[in-house]
Image 1 (cartoon, rainbow, N blue to C red):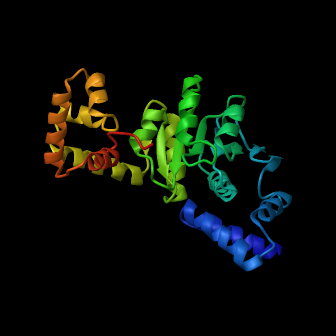
Image 2: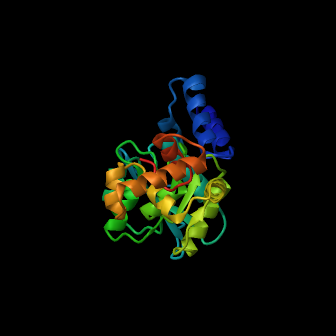
Image 3: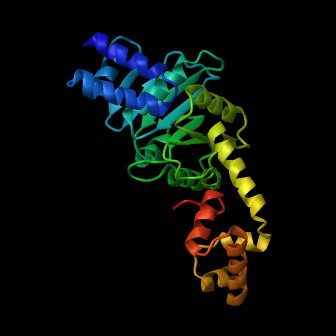
Amino acid sequence: MVKKAEIMVTVAIRDVNLHKCVNICKSRCSNSLGILNFQSIVVYLTITEQLPQFQHNKSATMLYNDTMSDNSIRIFITDDHEMARFALTTWIEADTNTPSVVVVGTASCGNDTLKIIAGIAVDILLIDIDLPDTSGLEVTKQLRAMGFTTNILCMSGSHLASSQDVINAGANGFVSKEESHAVFLEGIRWIAVNADSVWLSPYWHRQAMKSDNLLSQSHLTPAERNVLRHIRLSNKEIATELNLSESTVKNHLWSIYQKLGISSRREASDFALRTGIIPSR
């Protein structure tokens, strides 16, 4: 059983991205071994001292690592999948570059993150957007409202949020779970020394470029873009919000429809989502 567990973890850790890593672990645990679950792998690695000692608290875990130095980059991970937290911890702590990057704790939901993060020394919060109790964006907004200044790197595998959503929430960067562990480490290290800037992984950078191109090609005026930012409101509400008459709002919408080659408010809303003009819900 130990050999099979070791093989499973080795295959998962060496895979190219987080999604595949988690899927491989799930597949091997359920199909090959049956009774051996992921927790068994964690226990095995802990016993053999291949992982830092775990102090279990159900959905939240604090990690202790003797290799941490004063200049280490301390990171806290929030993801609802235990396998994802394990893979990220393994990738991060296998990195031999300096300064060292050390995982000081993990959580599986937003509420635990909010309870724990303020009481420990953290340089970067790596948080999944898609959490069971709330979204990583909401956690980010709450932390910023509380005066939390630590760097925040958001990650997502669903791609339901845009890079603009992440920036608006107050995060310092955004990475896709479909990207390699090298990209995750690049983002962590870049954010650690560029706190006043925003880092986008290659996937999200390409998406941002596409959005900029779409907007440029649409030839929408600043006034039309402003109306489009409020497309989820009624014409009357838009008029009130922008201090315009309803007829002016209707004229702007007609012009938007013509320029985009669409015929409905829903299509206008879809365009605004794709280009990041409005946030995802």
